Length: 313
Length: 146
Ligand code: SF4
Image (cartoon, rainbow over all chains, first blue to last red; front, side):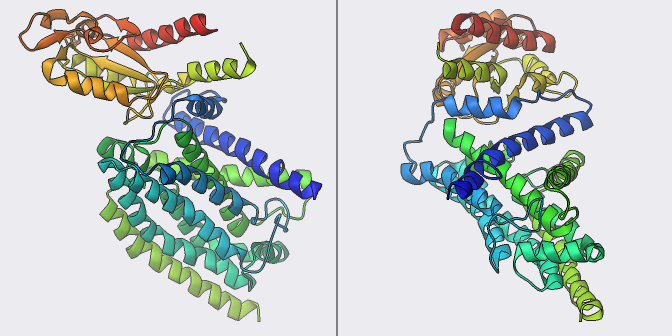
């Protein structure tokens, strides 16, 4: 009881998750700044932002539904946090696992997006409503390719449990190379999920001010920012667990370092993508996802079936 | 002062988010503000981020004399900012009305409508002066509260 409380609350649970996701936001911003030939923010910047926002006045618009307005940041934060416990990090065993947790994790990662949508909707402001609708439209574009991309490791391993998938790839590491298209697809889908450039269409501060978060301030905004950071960490961990399952049977300390490096690698790729692209329009994004990403993920599933038929029977 | 309020104060000084509001400038001051936001001056070093909405901002950067048209909007945008909030008047016009003082459609400087925490003179101001002004505003807060 005491140990599992420690696992959930401190390490590798909520405290570790919060600090590591703040560190990850710093890494992302600093890397982005360095690529633009800037000095970038100091290391404590995300922490200072979080503390400052938490201490600020939180305004709830008169027209808004106050209960839902307050609830949405918490919902997003909770869903992102809970999904972390099912992902194998530096060993082949996650903190908790059962058959089918892959599906549960992906659905839990969808909840923050729905929370963003509802938050924008109940704020009763035109800008946030536009942002909310765009967030939901975008969801339909990237979600299907993401689902199909994470399907292929599951097909190869013959299991719906993330821990069993990790164990399978740990035994047969060479099968990772058949999942490279899936890795690329999930990276792009992750950009859409995190609403980062080029898919920051729901936030687009030059057109619709701040998207769903336009009316949010103070600690509500702080929780939302935290939720996005944790979503980034969980997304990167999920991609690392599914498509880069290496170094899982090492000594825990070495495995931990390998895990950190893997997550940093995925986030660095995301930063590079957001530095070199500019924002595209919502119709371009949907066309891109359905014309290129979805067929590519079908091909990925086909590859997985053929490989399974040839080598794993 | 307890440790928590010290920490909050530190965080406030390290992460001032700004919103830019043109209250009737001739546009030169606005161009200089945009200049200060470019990677060349890299104000993210000080934790400064440009935000699109007053709800997220701590510091409102106003440029230009207040016209009769913009007066109500300026008040509303100011009221939409959550406490604690600060106002910086950028340019001679924003500080005192400048060359537009006495025009039939001009009220005067920003401080005729809302309280101002820092004045940055110049016509137009240089980006360095804007950064210096914001940093000095933060330093004065540190003395007051620290
Ligand atoms: S201070 Fe000078 S540059 Fe700035 S708005 Fe006034 S006239 Fe224009």
